Image (cartoon, rainbow, N blue to C red; front, side, top):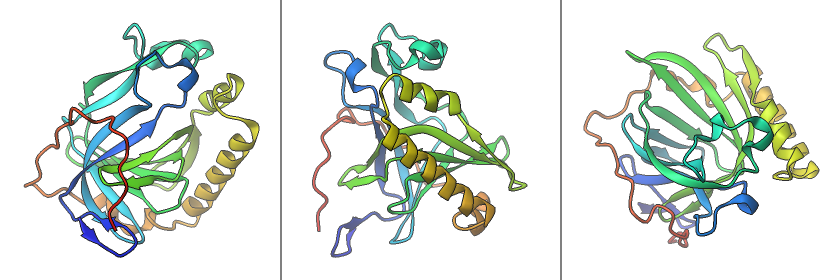
Length: 228
């Protein structure tokens, strides 16, 4: 990392953690970590305008599962967010994911490709603005998402999960209104084809010298203060 005076910047090729805090704290199994998603990534770019990271195929990650090991999305929606949970290690078997996040934006934009680098779509993940720390960035997922096709058409995703999260008390009315407004703001960027959609990231390719970053044993460590 290099210092900027305000906080440290990462250099291309640095390895960091992209993490999400657990929304269902009240239902978490005793002793489970407050972070329920952790993905080791490689820094592509880190500037005042954008943090871009690459999650390579074959990356070992941490994901939430039900306490008995069942996948979360195998649980009926009615009990998906109230059934006790824990975490499990798993491998990202799909194509790699490029994640783009502008400081302060309550969303990040992910790019997906099919085999042979056939660009599939952009995915807008509505989330809490990311908190930087020495080992990476932390956020909290807001359930609601947006898919954007190469032809610039778009659609809302996971509106049922967004509604269910509110129903079971994981998100209050004020927060839900703020998330929906953030989604509308993201749609304005999409329809106006602003950054990062207009910036040609779908043509980006990872440095072939990059290795898949390992998942550290202390992936759930408490965020440290960013050096200045």
